[in-house]
Image 1: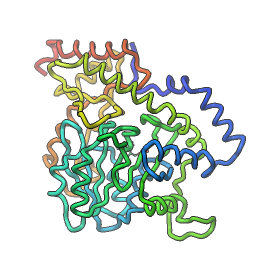
Image 2 (image 1 turned 90 degrees about the horizontal axis):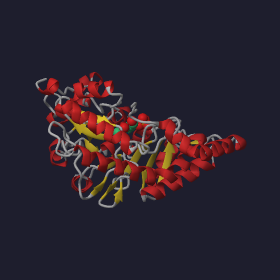
Image 3 (image 1 turned 90 degrees about the vertical axis):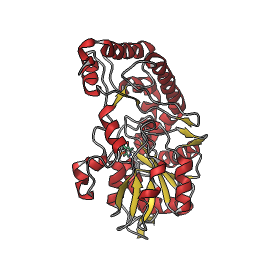
Image 4 (image 1 turned 45 degrees about the horizontal axis):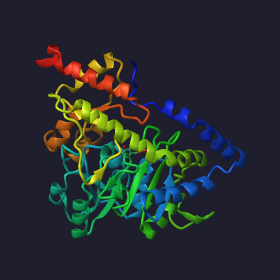
Length: 374
Ligand SMILES: Cc1ncc(COP(=O)(O)O)c(C=O)c1O
């Protein structure tokens, strides 16, 4: 049996008719930039997140960069975030001339540990970016409490958390702003690059809207300098269709997670994702942990199962951030977890038979004496 980490072809087949029809409509109208699909998608996605405003942009990195800029983050500022995330989270900070300040994660949520945040706050700290990694919301109550106490901005990196809930509230709706990526592999993915900023704050909304379109409100009147990062009409048409399927797809991912939970529970040698009462994760990936991660990955590959490692090197140890001066041992949880994590396939179309095969292969590996003393 061959099982990919993600199967976008199978998903496209299931919505082909809707997609092909809407894309041909876009070509018929030839309105490619900031057209009716972009405007409608912004309204629909804001409603989905339970916020007032949304600004659709070119990708998730731009969304975070522009959201920080719209909040006034600038050179000399410090922004606190997790070292265990995709590099875009930190890039968005440095692109604004600010400095990323990392705070270790909790090893059960893979998200920033709120108990350690206050220790990293200085007079230069202006914002916190919690990342809802793998679709598991960060501890937003504690983060918002700390932010309020120290008058800090909170921008949620919900790039992997479309529809995830924390105490009944949607990811992206709890901070001053939230951002999402619609990279094709995401739970809500475009057929190319795409991203969005969501907020309840009118100033952040208006500023983001200008910044993504050369700092203008009218055609050739530029109130500020911005960039060109507009979601294109074809991607918006695709995302409008896919958004209608998102709740169902997320529910199927959760169902798959429960099947994995059942099949993998009580197996010595691996840890499955912890379930929390107050969160509804959306399982961008189903991430297990094993001390024998690398050989388990190899074993599964030989059995035809694709897995991933998100992410093998925490940001503070990345060559690109050497200049920040961090060293090995600074963030023990991020470092430990990055050596043990393994992302299993959990896409909505994965069958029970496939999940059973994956679970059985993991069990076979762990019961194989050959691997026990490695
Ligand atoms: C946590 C996180 N933040 C930001 C991004 C950036 O999004 P994009 O790839 O759309 O620029 C990603 C995308 O992979 C991500 O996973």
